[in-house]
Length: 317
Image (cartoon, rainbow, N blue to C red; front, side, top):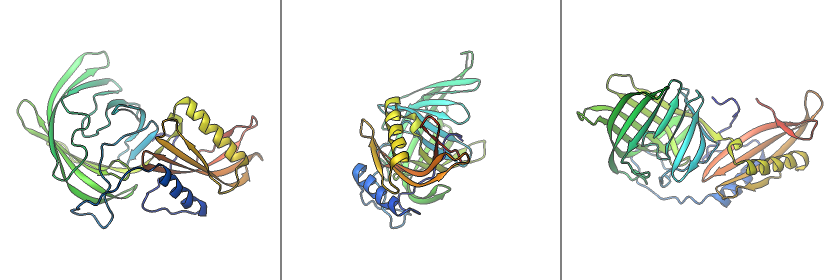
């Protein structure tokens, strides 16, 4: 897990709110920035909650997803349908925002790889029940010194099989179920299946089942997700930091202060709460931050104390 990120996940369907101002601020934030239309869709195994339209997901730098198998991944760059990820184990990858297509480049300790594919960036999106598609991909694996150790040709066939409500550590989600079967290009033998449970509420998969011919099944379930503002462009980081300092120093309890990124894709609210004194007598304050990133809402509870130079330093729980 990224040690610098401490998040409290907000499930947009249920808010357990200890502060009376928070729910009101959240309603305003969503009303100002949401833009995702809802559509009633026939469901196979979903309760009365409605599924959102499943458009191709988009990501912003700083968005973070952690799974119960130890996988932790954070967006470092995002542009024109391409996304770069950094992982808690030190590896990195880049490729389509469309997670149904394997990464196009990746690098880990001792090896790296590249891929070429005929899949379009928006392969299979928007998701529709009964949707089907196939693509080919060639993966080349390199040693750290650049030597090619293996080249693999694969064909993937993906279908939207229906919908299902799933429970994972991060909460309960209504999902589209998408199955992708992998075949060897040379002999057409089935090699495995990835089944994604995609939540349009957070526009990312909350569960992934990986089945293989000669290996045991692996399951990844979403444990937490959030946003780290330290990945914003430097100018916007500075603007947000100045707003935070003013809010903590002078803000009235429960009165929110708003901020919007220059491109309008990220909106935030800072809500100051109780003042108290730290261990050395310095001013400290609890606050809450809410971010709406293209429809994904993140809710953080934090504390900060004022340093001698006037800056505010977050307390790491």
